[in-house]
Image 1 (tube, rainbow, N blue to C red):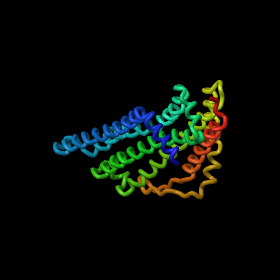
Image 2 (image 1 turned 120 degrees about the vertical axis):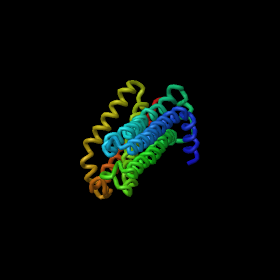
Image 3 (image 1 turned 45 degrees about the vertical axis):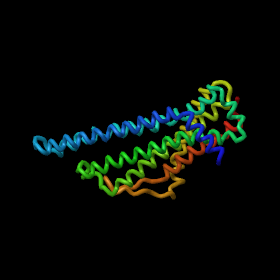
Image 4 (image 1 turned 180 degrees about the vertical axis):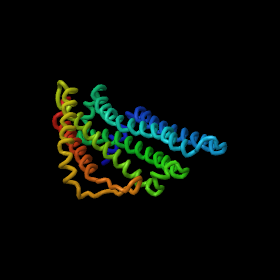
Length: 264
């Protein structure tokens, strides 16, 4: 465990500026949304004071304008930045020709690569956590001031946050699994590495889609999450379990191939 922690800290230090930039960007975008929301509340207070415009109409037309785009855009940036950050962590060693030092370490290569994955996953998990806190604050404010009377009960905010967090964590595991598989297979060949990585990606996505119905059916025993609002419905856990499992399988393939076949 100690070698893994040492390598984790090493990877964190090596890419700290890039990771900090993305983290600051995500937090900044959500903070901007909150600032706009505060400005919106101020305008709404003025409208209510003068009574020139129906505040309910103003609320329904403009509330999502101020916070929705920023929150969603930050979430997409978070998710889609992860594969590039992980690929960058792998490729940096080879471009700087320090991968010889990594292979010379008295630890298995899968530990070295897991440290890279863990660093990028940490960035994703922290980003998701911050996003959920700020997103829950959005919903809480919207419910308290009456923007979401008909669609959101205050007690359901934690459950909504749980489902959204599960979606993001599942996506992170799958994405990092596929990228780890791509990188492991890519460095197992000397030529056409880019083409090899693309081929693995296409095969992984194809297999995931082809096995999705059977996977969901197989994991139906995993249960459901009940959502009371905005309408009574349930979300099955089977797709999440299947997606996480496939991500782990692709990750294991990449780690094993890299360990056994990486061409230095």
